[in-house]
Image (cartoon, each protein chain N blue to C red):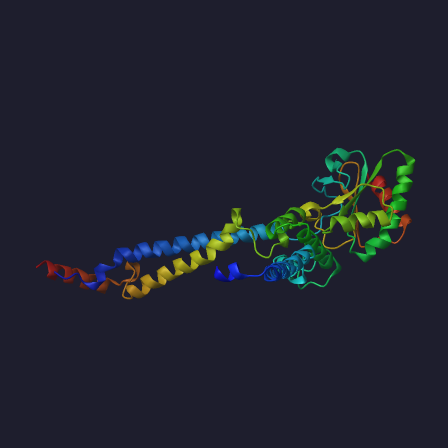
Length: 162
Length: 190
């Protein structure tokens, strides 16, 4: 506060100039970034393209595909990004236009849920059965027991009752 | 009083076995259902003489064309794409054949172009480049090509006035005469 009271008009002018210069310098990178946003980079395009598959050349992600149709599709993604579309909007457009076959993974809806739920369910059920088997290793199904064992069991029960 | 080891697990073992059998039957039923679905979806070509399902095509001008409403006419359905080089050679031939039938003014023959897995702007540029005048539209979600089991482009299918498939051309037509002959054969067979 004391320093400000003692500043000369020339110092005040210099401070104002420095402030304006700093503000301008601070906005230059921001303006540069905004200008870059108008033309999406290859990385931005490929980030979406990697989640889509070429329906012509099966099992090839769009970002790795070298065919003419994939090039057209990547150009379309670039164009949509430049228009301000979000990643989800672009993916939805591709599904609407070309079908679900373009998706890298099946959508989580309808019967597709079976694909996500069944494998863990089978693993859990299998694990439970194994756990049960190891917990009771001596279990002998009644159908496989021979008459001698039946007799021994009856004798033991009779003995226990006594 | 100590229970002996034989009587202890008899009932749980039965219940467990029942569950194992139920789970096994469930998994087998699931696999059979998936197998049946895959069998139904397999890419077997549609046969000449069969009646392919009807479809609706929204052309690039927004007009809706339903093949069920085209009975009484011969319908030529051409699957193409702007990225397909043989389609470029064929486009001019198809347009010439269309001009011939369209010029007759009888309206007995209809051409439908179906853009397969194409970007709309590229499709429109292609149609403009080759001055294609018959109705063309996008194969939205690949539904039309699925119905016709299309595996590549170009492919052309010709339906007779009753909607029965009379001609199939896999690959490009070599000449306008070949297209006209295929159409006339469809007319004759009907």
